[in-house]
Image (cartoon, rainbow, N blue to C red):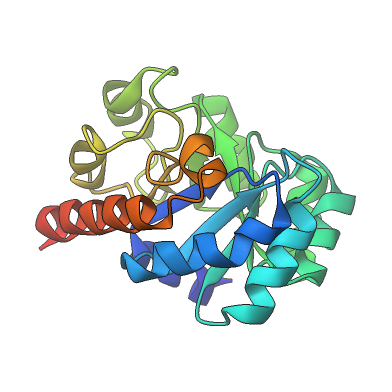
Length: 212
């Protein structure tokens, strides 16, 4: 689990993807990788998620693939079975967290209050997703909320884009940011892989400039 979290931290920017057609999974992940992003969270917001992870995991072993919007144990199991290396959820469901930790699957559940953080800590987690980041108060909220929890690191997701990415990454407790601006539904549906690669490169430039 720690190895996976380290790889996520090294990537710094995790594309959050909603795929309607599993046939788009491999070319999309290739476009992200061409831009320097070698990790992705494929969300279970569509029926194509499971097959998308399966295809991308089989074709692109260098990509670190995660499953997002995981709301129950069944989905977590399906995701892991087809190649997902980490699980992300919008909230903190103790049963899902326990299943993942018992099966050595990295999980980053969502939090947006101190009570959520303490629930995560009680489950043995110190890497949590701050969600929905901008709607929940943004970086100002995260600074205030995280102050008592020096042992916890966060992956803000929700409203992150090229305009505020550097601000979030500059905050020491942030180990990565999730976002979909480089792979929007419109770009995916248009199969505009070149633009996805360009936006990915821009994200990598922001990351490298911020963290150097």
